Length: 215
Image 1 (spheres, rainbow, N blue to C red):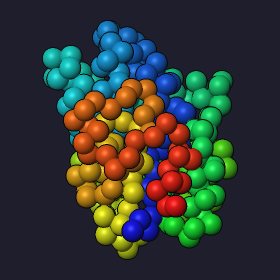
Image 2 (spheres, rainbow, N blue to C red; image 1 turned 45 degrees about the vertical axis):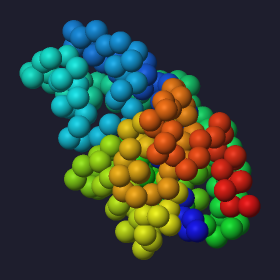
Image 3 (cartoon, rainbow, N blue to C red; image 1 turned 180 degrees about the horizontal axis):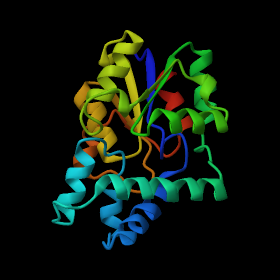
Image 4 (cartoon, rainbow, N blue to C red; image 1 turned 90 degrees about the horizontal axis):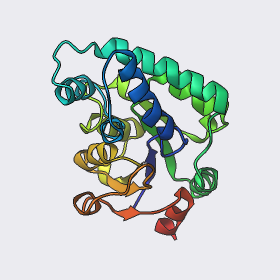
């Protein structure tokens, strides 16, 4: 029985992954690197300490200044969001209201830092829906390690198998799967391959379709 639903944020609750897909290559170009779309997609939900290592390996450059590149990418993201606003993903409010009525607990488990997570969720009115807000900055290892989901389950006082993680990216799915959670995927920028599909409890097009799991 599912007692809690743990949501990724970027690309799952809010439509921001499309901007990361633009901003990573722009930030890399600013520092003299050419990043392909495929390489940008591989950065989705990738947390510490994996992101710096992954980026250095992709560009075969141990001297790549990850903190500076990431800081510039964050600046670009803020500019895009200030200009375009933050869109809530289709079906999010319907699902959150449904879960609230069913008294199923709700948490966010995101790779984004806490300051921006809280600011974004408050800005779009989703903050009050959640019992817990968990940022990857609160754990030692970010996604795709299991730490964030293990910690989220512990904060809720539930076993991982009692929790459904909702993710849009492969790194997020792997994190939740390794923690022992049930995993739902709502693909955003790319579809899951056959190997990833084997790890999913369900794959849906929009968040509100997940209500069927509780019928």
